[in-house]
Length: 298
Image (cartoon, rainbow, N blue to C red; front, side, top):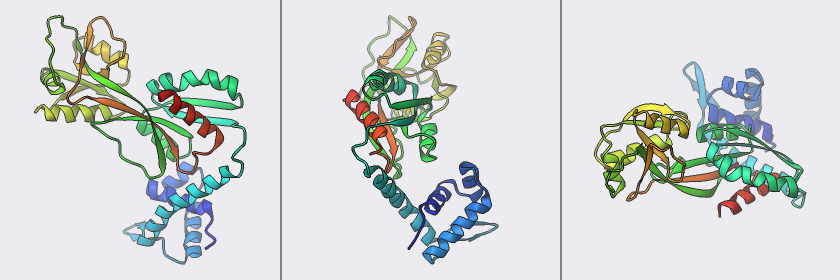
């Protein structure tokens, strides 16, 4: 069929972003270039890929199917590229986007080893919440995304990426310390006691808000979300100031006036992942680092 991979990449980006202007802006090219390449792809395949939709265009059924095939085709091309030299010494710059805890817990401990065992592998690290990291991975601005979800609020699956489970961590309810407080039993009983409190959630990711609303719904109340902050330390500062309660890692160091109340039955468990684009897993630096992260998590 003679379809060029570059044109398939543009088609796939169009299916993700929704407009030629957005594709052009994302890739640093002109809208007319995108239009010309999609038109050339349509001519090569012999089918209409787009159809009029008011004053805009949308995918035809054939165009949508080809965009779906493009994911598999481009992944296979990338896999073939790295397979040409499978024994190559890992070398190159690996771009990583991840949430702060994963960077501290998983990535930083392996960097010293890499400097000794694989000095030609360089890591560029940027802190991002999962949704931000996934966008960067999809646009090929990073090679590896470290993300998380909760067992009670699982993330949506993405067919364009490969997910590797790393470690899990129990979460608890952070509340003002109270020596007179009795054991509360189940998670539902624990959160129900704070049904009239203000609640603190993450400002850059909605996963903890989703899991909070799930547990609160099971406990028959609607939480009052009042504060949105990104820092776990700031969550504790707000708790100490009497401004509310919020979820915190069960093993996180706490301020003297903050108490971590266990959440059981149901438990709240954070699950961390290493995400890579399909077809890139065997690129030696990426395969090396993901292997080290998995071994450390195991």
